[in-house]
Amino acid sequence: MNLPELKIGDLTAKIPVIQGGMGIGISLNRLAGSVAAQGGIGILSTAQIGFQEEKFQRASVRTNLQTIKKQLDKARSFAKGGILGFNVMVASFRYDEVVKATVEAGADVIISGAGLPMNLPELVGNAKTKIAPIVSSVKAAKIILRNWAKKYNRTADFVVIEGPKAGGHLGFKASEIEHAMQTMDDEVVKIIAHIKEYEEKFDTKIPVVFAGGVWDRADIEHYLNLGCSGVQMATRFIGTEECDAPDDFKDRFLKATEDDIHLTTSPVGLPGRAIDNKFTETISAGVTDYKAQAAPKTPIIPIAKCLNCLQVKLCDRKTIPYCISEALLNSVEHNTDMGLIFSGTNGYKINEITTVKAIFAELTA
Image 1 (spheres, rainbow, N blue to C red):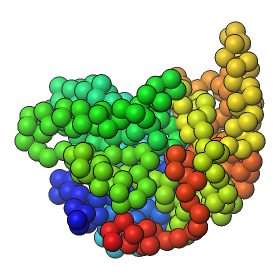
Image 2: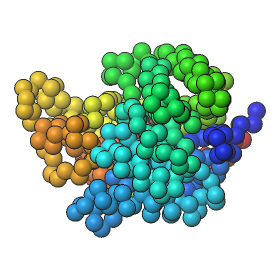
Image 3: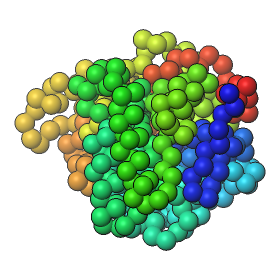
Image 4: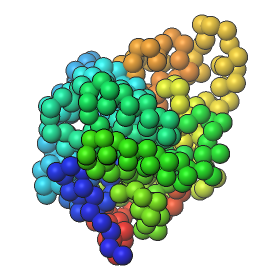
């Protein structure tokens, strides 16, 4: 069968593949633009998006906001008119300002997770930018869609369902992940059924896109058969020349085995999946003692400098176990031993550095 187009309102992606946002510095202008040029949807991560800019260390927040348009414009220069957007974490410092900056920059789409994006419609307003929440359960879908309908009289333009095989931060408690591995297909069907209620209410099509562990054509067809309109793939694109990550970051994937990829603890309060290294060993060795400490807690890895990445309510730099920004920045600034290297469950399958074009050719063959 030929893969169907992915239609999101008046936007049409020729290939029903969204490249998932990966931060810090993994999916920026080159990767996103290359995916868009092949007919997919390219997503830049806003997480510390300005980290390569000269003024970042002195004024990280302002630099990040200013870099959003710069990165999007670069992506558009070789996207061949394709669809581009941003992934914005709800947990982000000054989330509202970040979303507004992506809209002002001209983003086609915004995908928002790592929390419930309850006020996303208000931030986007009447702009043409399409919006999608990331959900991992029918419960989360119900909460968000009900709130958007009641408070803003609108619904999602599309919905991304993220399963337990994804890399990065996961929308599950660590204790729930094993069960979710076995039941996620059923949950997808339930979420799609619930979304249909809002399609009828607003007389519109709300495409559902599945993310987490999607690797090849068979995976895409599986989720299309469940009723999804497309998929989101992230980890697979790390193994490309166009991925914005440095070569030593990619080398970690080339060398990884299936047994090297595990869940780890994140300061965001969510479990995350990453490739084992000295950093994850340090965190794993210290987390039990950290949790047992009475307040105020002592960090497992002391924070050198706050870069304002998380909302204040989520981060006390004096007591948080480690700085998520420092860990992610290490991984893309040539310190992969002490960096956090997020990966989906299939990261070990990257055994060569290929191209975005070659991946799309394989997926559409």
